[in-house]
Image 1 (cartoon, one colour):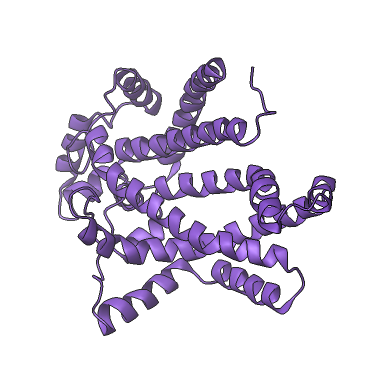
Image 2 (cartoon, helix red, strand yellow):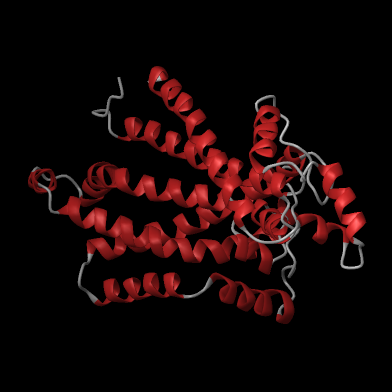
Length: 315
């Protein structure tokens, strides 16, 4: 297992190299001048040229990339063009808020999606299954920004129970304030992802319930609770864990729309700000972090496979 993990981590290096090259090329293919956005509309052409030279943006694209790559290998991802702060510091500042929102949204999605999937799979075709399947379709069909606005109007504007603008408060510093600030954006994301969780887990459970081992377990007189909980659910979790991992990676990678609706200071909002100002180093740093998150969570999912199913051996 350790050898497999090390091999996967080594494979991350060429992936990051290829990705950084592609991201750099796409960024520079977009029209616009980051210096003009930084100095303002009233800046003279001489001022723009001077700032361009000072930032090194007058050099050829491949020279700028190689310089950035050489510095990145030493842990220096450059300075933000707009903020003039280290990119790594700006990204690290947003990581705790993003992780907290991602984990909270995943928990909400699991709390809603798993019971719906289990109940629907145990009574397929019935009125309850149709009703819960309708909930899954509704959860997937409602835009997250619209649901977020509705939650703000209800709980923040009318009832005044929760803040409309969600600030980041660490769960370790003040659990109650952290819960109040994270509840609305986490619910907005969790409701959407619960539809995905419910559909995938229901389909997986229905497939497992038709297997021979389920019929054998029931013929031996095992309680239905043990058949579902100890046998069916464990086998159905393998494909389901993949979906949970992908959704968690997506949340941690930044949920742009939800963070914008709730003005939440996460990585997605930082990335949008960087794109709007054409802050090349910051865009590169944000996207590379998101890529690393996806690879590491996929690695965690693969390791979890071996724990769920001991027959899986990575050698």
